[in-house]
Length: 596
Image (cartoon, rainbow, N blue to C red):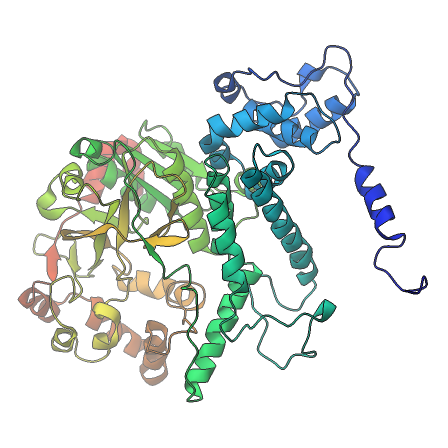
């Protein structure tokens, strides 16, 4: 072999190893400095919070002190246990470290795995997996740790390079003819449009092998779940490309080949009910989580309504600063208010997510993992619990079978016209009332019968879940556990989630442009059926603004004829919310300012 051949790394592997080993010198210590002992009290460290300046290190300039300060700055305001975890990983990356370092790392993951996974971001979880690869207590830990280290290391390399491509990380490349039939080292390309199982086999084997060891299993499953749920990875992009190719084949009259793997969003799982959450005693404390961007009056009305129903706690995340509402809410002992400004997202070690839905899912999951409630519902600011006959929510929750993780409340859309007593009125879908779709044609004269359930709001309903299930991801209309959608959910009848999605014509018109371009009316490209956005486009094209108003009146006006038709099929609910009275009852005279 010619010595003049080109190589990516001049000097070859001797130079690679020299560069790698040059960064692994052991830490130096000054007198009195030492890594925490093996018998360290973890409970005490969880109650101790780090200061960015690390005054406990004095003016020491040892290698240990420098790393200690760097991690103290990163974990400022967070527990000393997380700081210790970072120190252990830093030490175990060196050629030598105190003799008890690996044992302390192992003990930390044996005793505090749940805490670490709740409060460490994905970057630190990957670092932990890499450390298991080098210092695992058995072959499974070392093998899986090394495999995850290689997987995420290669992802970081190729995803970084892809940042220079013309498409964003969450966008797959368009289908086109490949420039070369083979890859580097003469490997065949992955069969994106066929039944290639490289991705499934790789992820599946890691999951299976990692599950064999009780210490590393929770870490492996959390990392792999985060991986398959992320929309900015090669796995998601290949999945989208595969689906598009299958659709192209079907449109061309060709039969698409069956895929070996069921996409994550279609897999189902029976989730376990957390210990102590299966009896009726667990219904005493229920709460709500909501990400909100709304006027102060709407925020206070939402909070007052559910507090007046008996909520044990409300977790309210303000998507934009709302100081007027926050000032009133945070004085209530049953409300936790979090303003999701730049400082909040910086503290999460992640950029502010680009869509409202992604942020909703994130904060709902955070609240689920931290709440002291027995049940938690994920509800929007324009949604209100409508328990059957006004019965206590605790009684509603007690109806859920003990082996079900939660319940789904079906949607009821608020009508513009009030009920007979001047209070709010809502309509149901035909399915909620037990009818076939044909009844929609008898209620809605023209285009309303083409909408899902005759609704212009969502028909998917909202979830209430028993809390305490580790690894659960709380979504908007569903929840996921172990990378699959939870199936043991009770579909409740009689009680509903009242949705003030378009409770008035001005509200509907004001939100229309946003919903068409960035919100719930956007067209789903993988859905060939007539969608709400298509209907509205058609209405505006043929009838203009007057036609749009006629359309709204037809589906949501709540006039006498519509009310009579809905009532005929048991699809009408008169359910006064009494929002002004509740606001004053819960928040006192301060709320009256917003009732003008």
